[in-house]
Image (cartoon, rainbow, N blue to C red; front, side):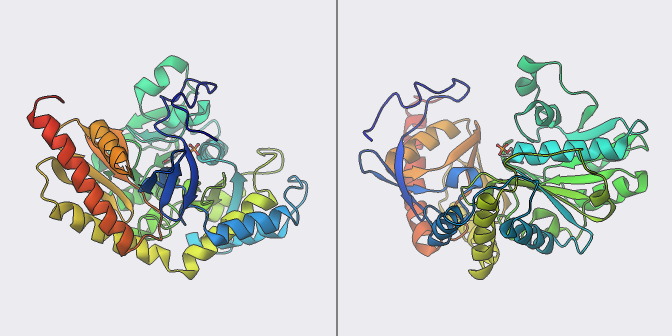
Length: 400
Ligand SMILES: *Cc1c(COP(=O)(O)O)cnc(C)c1O
């Protein structure tokens, strides 16, 4: 296929103009239609955990497609049962955990929303979520997403959701016995990689338990080893009632899941939820292979170590534009002192580096979990050059 500047002409206009057209990927690299190579530190927004075209991913998808891809949820398949057991083990649910499979993050959160309603019934109509957190674009998950500009064109929202600031005081003030669930995004990725305050999750666990509300963690971006633990809640030594996962679990295959703990596992009963594609043999075989490779290659530990390494590299650049790092492991937010994040992303792409700007003053890095010294050294050189490009235009007064 040839390079097209108007790539996306036939696609719905809900996304901005496509920034490039890629024809091939391998490891941490992508190639466009002109043969230009890019270092990919976005990994499809924290999706390609193993990088592009990893042999374990390719083998799983090919072999399962040649065996059995889909049978519907009237029946079970081995890859589905194996992935459910693996997710329970990695999340530490013990025997009582259960897993619901969907095809995306939004579908995992839709299932969690329904779980919250089943738990709440008529006595607990309130659902709490955090201002600025992102939970998805479908009508249910949009109702959970505390960003008024996203909701506004689609009002009225699904009722019952209230937004609170991410402080322990706001939690204490909001929780009562009429709350069904509290949704928490442990590091707010889409908002700009914003960390929760120290002690927040422990307080959230204590308060939700005291009031009989579910604690539901949206681990769609933070899960699958990205933060240096399998799931971000594991850094804090708490046990939630449910977590949602997607993005990095499938390594590029669309799959999402709701994982329940303890008595929350008893809430769904036959007929209360479902999906035609969710948990099919093909998707679960791929996700199983991706998670197995993350385990085999020690990539959760690698994410922790490479995250520290990249932060040191960024701080070592001594750029006057940079205002510190946020996040954990390989979910890194780089604060900028001026609202030039889009210019930095464009300059980086010009130099062959793919990064992303979740807001005007933040660069987000979410590379594959298996990156090493070679990729990090190359990142450092390209990112420094991109920053210098933007610093130059700033001093010329071109970018305000
Ligand atoms: C990406 C994301 C979602 C939505 O996932 P989709 O697969 O795009 O539906 C929900 N929550 C968080 C925290 C995310 O990062």
